[in-house]
Length: 328
Image (tube, rainbow, N blue to C red):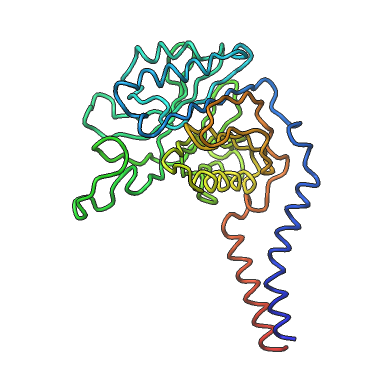
């Protein structure tokens, strides 16, 4: 009897999770039907090989390639264009001529949202960040976000002086971490939480703390997640698929859609219930023209409780096991 009791406890929690998920999906609108009006995105995946991405003699051509893809037929119907992590291989804030050239791919009244390195103003040898920019039709930088969770040995080297190791990415300097997660609120777009590369894999750490639970301190809660990435580092391995699976899970947990744009990897549109509405596969070059899915009308249990949910489950399981051992 006791053994079967332990088995029942082991099966109960997964069954509850599965049942809750099935209940949410049963009440969800048909996939692709609940969308934000007047928001029409174009996602650009150029699939530039990692060995070529940072070559100085090819940087301008990489930008031109993405501009051509952005201007492909149907551009005139788009409201916003989104490029991947470090899609612009220049210090964009220090390149006013390039900023003006990029206005060619900014839809009227919209934005080009793209990744590029950023350096401290007027300090060429100052700190450098892996950043996301929003560029408007005049070439003005309307918003920036600096990556917070850096990849060890990729974007910075822990204990560099002690270990004597160099980082794996281009450039001799370590990237600096950003000041924290944030919510970007741009005209014509619902507020969103920007996440660069593997920042999307951390449960409960994908929206700014001030935004959890709604508008607080004058800040708007994000209505969608934007994940820009470059998974070319993984090569033809399971890495890009695992990364995408983790990203989808964050949409399910938070109950808000995910827009994912990769240099190479899996670019995708995922709704608030984790359903993939469209995607570009690994090693493919292409664009996705999509509307923005609506956020779920009701918040998820996880978005309320966060990782405390797992502690509560652990506590309840421990109590049940104690009762079984004591009285059965």
